[in-house]
Image (cartoon, rainbow, N blue to C red):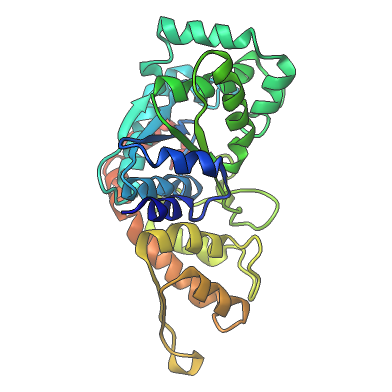
Length: 336
């Protein structure tokens, strides 16, 4: 694959690349690595899988992929995961990510606790803290941590996420657009510490199934589809989701189609009676969006097709956790 093709593949469905010019230069190297972090704070849902599926594009472009299971970060964020729960939630998160996508090659999984507690790392955390004002740390963490009554740990959070780039030895970090302030902070603080800044890739966030105004979230059960939800639950949630006829802005079903279904399946097949236009196959999101906006594709038909494909995509992870219900129960009611 030529570098121009790699750049196009890496760039598709992204919101911002900091910077595109740096990425172009990076692609001239023989070996490139990238990571995405997933805090173990709650159930894995479709919004997370959208971000994680970008790592498949990176794999196709020949980039080594690392998944950081951010167990320590989950505790730092106002104890969204209790300290005594970290191992179990890390196990759940890692296995769910492994089984939720058809990886070209199994990614390298690294738990934060494997390296973030080491002397050298913690020494750099302290070094970075002496160059970071409280105001700057708050701004960096503001869209990621809870910040209701900011804890010191929430100010440490962006410092550690910045250092993860160096200690994982990667060239690229990938994350949702809510990570932008942390990514910007990382590019500021790493050179001060004598380390190189990395390329940052920002991805869109999926709108809540309930509609505009908030994103799909682990902390909002009605906004999300868990990766291990039962088939009937997935279908029900999709059928009840916000998806006004002809409306493409902030439409979660269209977003799921664009960012998850097409990259993973390459097409969407709509089944419908002949008096409603008959069956139709869309080989690109652009075609589907055009017909939806023109009201040639009804929400009910789109929802039926999307639900069927999500059920198929998540089959392996769903079946795995169906056999380990006791483990899910031990994580708390939010995981059931």
